[in-house]
Length: 213
Image (cartoon, rainbow, N blue to C red; front, side, top):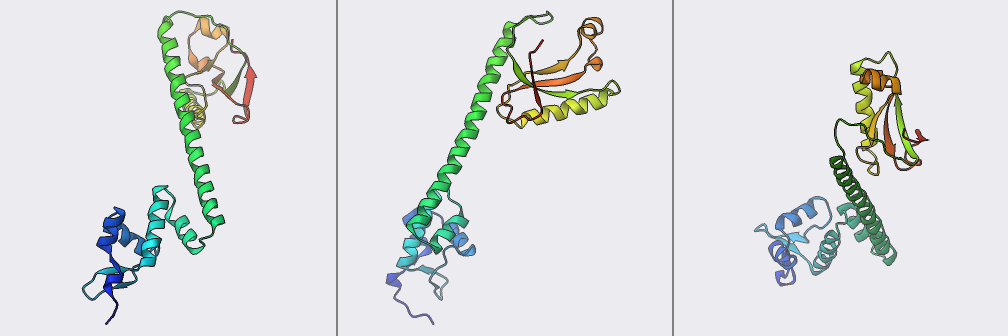
């Protein structure tokens, strides 16, 4: 029989109420060996010491920063100032990467909206001449022997590679045709390549810089 002064201990319910967390969270922390009760009484109550109260305070605050259980466990094993600063620096870098990624998505959305607005101003079924500055193009060459199915497959792969780059210009893609084929047949089976505009040569090693006709 465990003989301890329970007035010096916190039950799971008391700790959960103090830190505004669920008792299930305490059970989970015990399961992953992050924080286990000092002892379990005969009636099944889980009891935590004052030291464990302080450990839980660290855990709750670090979880509020979305720091992983694994990294918190490592910190509790080495509670040095240097380790704590490293933990914060790593989380800062992670957050900055997320911000950068989301900013790229926001920028792409704005370019899509602008592109849609421009397309609304253009008259359909009419040829439009416009000046284009030099741009980087990714080309997917097509062979005369490519049938419709193989061309669709290449177009899908071309689009997937383009979609993986969030900085890619939205909807700036098309077919490369010679002038005779365009005016004579309007048959895209005569196209020579698929193309899409890209923004950076470092991200697109197979891009070719040329002026859009």
